[in-house]
Length: 107
Image 1 (cartoon, one colour):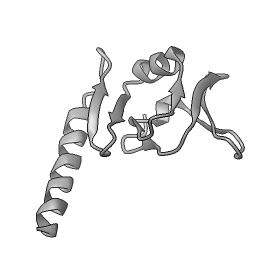
Image 2 (cartoon, rainbow, N blue to C red):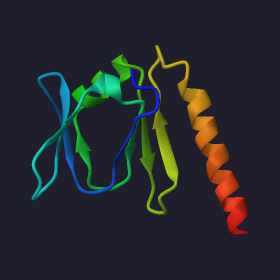
Image 3 (tube, rainbow, N blue to C red):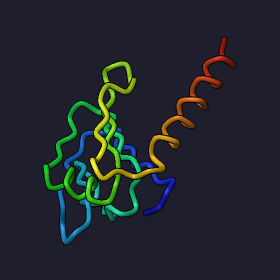
């Protein structure tokens, strides 16, 4: 697995599995593809994203997390696989620390 790849979906999209890859379809754009094993975190940052359970299963099989944000763009839900990626909690803590230090600089 690529340890640092975060796939951020910020626009309306439909995610499905096509030949073992995650297929990302957006209106007016060609489909994009990503290998589940290349994703550490899938961040769903828009309220009209649709995805199949097959996508969730493929990501969990490779140890990826799925993060959902709320209307204020804050994390609201996190799905972690049972046989998870051991580096994920450390990586998420690093991101929280960076965010907190950025917020402190703004004050």
